[in-house]
Length: 117
Picture (tube, rainbow, N blue to C red):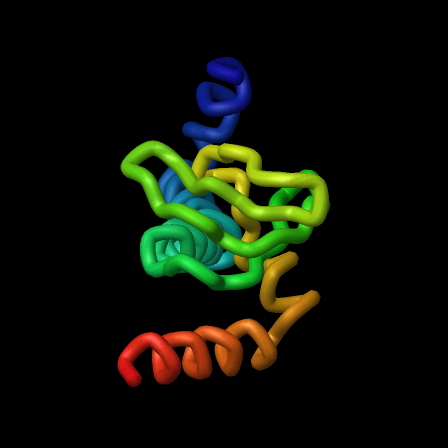
């Protein structure tokens, strides 16, 4: 790699052009790959932090259930076969929204209305 830079130096401005191109490539990678991934991770974390008891969720393993308890280190998920404890990271925003979409949000609103009455 060093020999490529040494060979390019006698031509004058090509080394500065090479640095500019590498900088442009880095900025491109940042905006096309790194920034969207960081945004997705932030959305996932916010989704997991804002889940409440009674919310229907889908886990990354494909398990469907309803949140029975919210704990500091995870959730207790109620399924047809019983209650199971999972880490918060196991709940998938993408799978939950794809499966339940607005139904999960509507169910949350109904349950909070009945609890307030």
